[in-house]
Every structure is written in C-alpha cells, then in structure tokens.
Amino acid sequence: MNSEFYNVALNRLRYSLVWEASHTLYNALAIGPTDDVLVITSAGCNVFNALLQNPRSVTAIDLNPVQNRLLLLKYQLIRYHTPNVLRALMGFEGPLAVGPTWQRVAPTLPVEMQAYWQPFFEAHPGGILTAGKLEEYILGFLPTLAPEIQAKLQQLLYFSTIAEQRGFFAAELDGTDFQEQFIAYFDEANLSKGRDPALFRYALESGGQAFYSRLKSTVATKLVRDNFFFRFFFFGPVGLPEFLLPPCYHRKNHERLRQQLPKLNVLTGEAVSHLNSPAGQGITKASLSNIFEYTSAEEFRRVMTSLFPMGGRPLRLVYWNLLQDQGSTVADQLPLSADSGRLSREDACFYFRNVRLLDAALMATPVSSSPLAF
Image 1 (spheres, helix red, strand yellow):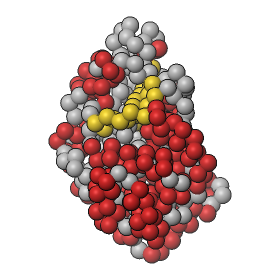
Image 2 (spheres, helix red, strand yellow):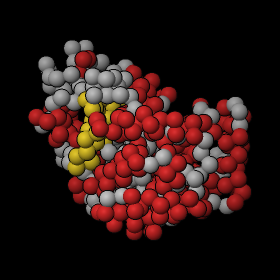
Image 3 (cartoon, helix red, strand yellow):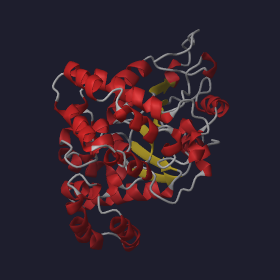
Image 4 (cartoon, helix red, strand yellow):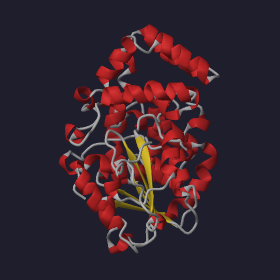
C-alpha cells in the first residue's frame, strides 16, 4: 500500500499507547476461537487484548520495528513476571516505581533485549506510557496551562451526572483561554511535534479545532471520569483506576493472557500487503488502526478492491479515521456494516473522527445511494 508512513523515520517509539479502544475492537470483530486475527502492533495493547478473546491465532504487524520491539518486551514481562512488574514499567505506579523495577527485571531478559532497553529506561524514567513521540507531545499540554485551569480540568473527574459535567465545562472552560490554548497546542503547526508533518498530507480537518469539537462533544455526552482516554490525555497514567485500563493491563487477566501467548506471531511489514499475500489469506478478522489516514482516497479505493473482491474470502475488518474520512462515500463501494455508526458514537475514543467496520459477508448487499454520515 502506498502510504506516507514510508516517508517518516521509523527509528524510535512513535506510540506508547494504543488509542483505539478495546471496546471498539471487541464489539466490531466479535473474535472467536476459530478466528485468525491480524492487528497493527502499535504499542501492543490491542494485540494482547485480541489474544484475551481466545482466537486461534493473532498476527501482530507493524512497519516500525521499534513498535514490535516494545511488543516483544511486553511479551517477556507477561510470560515471566507478575502483573505488578508490567504495570510498574508501563508507568501506572508512577516514576518512583519504574527505575527499581527495571533494575530487578533487566538481568532476567535476553542479553540483546536488555542492552536495547537499558538506555530507554534511563532516558524515560516515567516508564513506557509517557515515552512515545505522540504521548510525550500530548502529555506536554497540561503543564502549559495555568494552575487554576488545571484544577478545573481535574474537577471534571468528580461529577456524577453528565448534565453537571456539561454545565461546568460550558461555564468554566468553553470559550475561555483553555479553548484557545487547546486549539493552538493541537493545531497542525504544533501537532507535528507528535506526528511527522508528512503524515498530515491528506488531512481534511485542522487538528486543533477538530479535536476541541470532539472533546466538547465527549464532555456533553459521556462521564469523562469513566473515560480512560480522556483521563490519560490530560493527566497521564498515574492514578488511573484499574477497571478503566485496557483489559491486557488488568491483574486478573494476566495469567489468562500468559496462556494465550503461544498463539502470537510478530511480523515487521505492511498490513495490507500481508493480507493480500498467500500467508495472509487465512486471516478472518483484522484491526487496522488508522493506517488509511496516510493514503490518498484513490489508494484507499484500490486497497479496498484488493481486500474485498466479489466472491473473495471471508474477512471482517475495522479501522479508525482521525483527520480523514476514508470510506464515507458511495464511490468507495464498501461492504460497510451498519454497526459502524453505533461504534463511532458509543465506543470510539474522542481523539478519533469515526470507526468503519467492513464485512465481506455484506458484499451482496446493495450499496446505499446516499453518502454516509456518522
């Protein structure tokens, strides 16, 4: 697939967190014991979340070998260590837990892995979750705000009704310096600090205004105290209630996840190419993150034609739109599930624009005569 991702340096950790919600992954793909699943590696969260659904196999694939290195480090921690070790190195227990935990764990790792990650933890004492290029940029926003604005953001976590939360946001934050600073910080000129400028070639929206509108909508419709991504976005990993975390980081799931690890296969490469290869023909479910954000509309249509030919194999896949809206028109001729709209409204992180769920089983269904609107 022709992607702008080939034009950025893949020599560092770009993502330390998967921003595609596990709830969306589960509700979209309905993974079962006969499924062979493909997942974009990214930070590995949804690779492990998919394993927790007891599929026949999970293939993790990423163009960036550093993301796969992170996945394999987590694999090692899950296989040989306690859930407390994984949580500490992720950064959930705060910076004071990271260094001592790493010093205990490092000697147990393969020599090459230990040598690779030693400088990483020296450079990132806050742990894995604060170290991705995107996450470093996002988490740099809160300290730029005045203490009184920070306190008002924190207060959003204490409301028990959406109405109270919405009213407070409207009165104390919307239309204030907070709105102006948020839009400026996350607009395209600054957003390149978290994502390379090449990745915005096909963006249809301005990042700052788009993200603020989505933030405002989220505050008006969901309790943000129960939203993992909202809380991480503004306040980072420390102090997050365990029930809000992605399932792979729950202590209760650690042993079950450990038992599923033999089903994992890790590849460095391009997901669409693998799906279209002989080795990828057995994949039945796929989670493609937001990889189509970095392609033209023409390339997107070409890829979809290759993945969903008439009379082709059974394939069900989900992807997310960020600043593009790939798959929104009749011309795309997609086997689009009606659940896409529901998943966008109910499950998608406010960071994303929408979710698209495609299913080859719908290929015989007539295509709607009007553009899609979610």
